[in-house]
Image 1 (cartoon, helix red, strand yellow):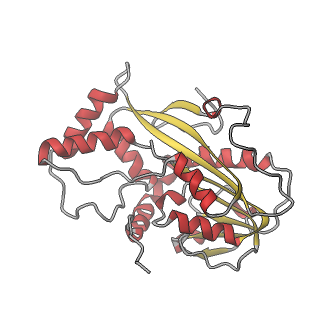
Image 2 (tube, helix red, strand yellow):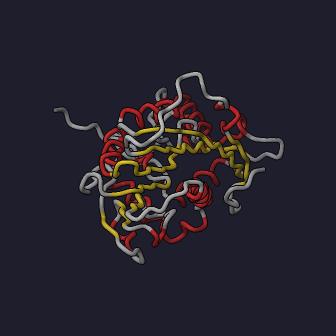
Image 3 (spheres, helix red, strand yellow):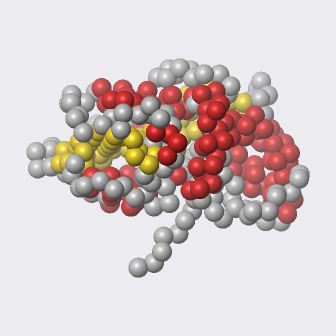
Length: 296
């Protein structure tokens, strides 16, 4: 059996989150939005859940209504009804014990997403529900392109400086591979505008969502890298008001623990609604508090 390749430095991730903790509420608009959307989806399901797990404690969906909350950072347990410091990559729960597992912007940092989803599915009771929001493949595409081009021009090569995010097709395939029944994935795209790229990078730092890739060089990048990247960003992605756009693509994952009583999935090609009709795209200004559930 081969060792798992670590894409993310989980210790660095914890350091970033702790550094951001004091002012996180000034930068948590994405977490607000996705938590509100997950609550809406939960309300649409006519069922009471008596054994629920909140996976990730930074901006919870269930709060103290969760039977138990887990997070990789033990300092986040304060005020939680029942909390366990646990890596979402290694869930230590008895199989088939929970009827709801919900996760808000947490799973995109896992090194082994297929394994994490499999553990989640195994932990669910038959006909138990899994709901999650995570960042998707188009997230920060403008910043990634600008940093890459800037480093190519300065150094003749480029190191990855923005996390890779899962594509919606891959997310759907991973739900199926993990054995979820009736798996559903959909997208919500939020376009946020900022005064410039440096303000965006400050926002990411405030979210605790900055680079934690293991393959990023430890050496200090060239002094000219970030000014050059900011200049390229401005040239390519500024709107008519001079503000730059940053894309945040949210993937919503929905699946059930298999149970014989469940309805069967539709045959391919029998759906009445096109995926494109269900996709949302909105724009907000960075530095402003987003109103969950609203569109512009």
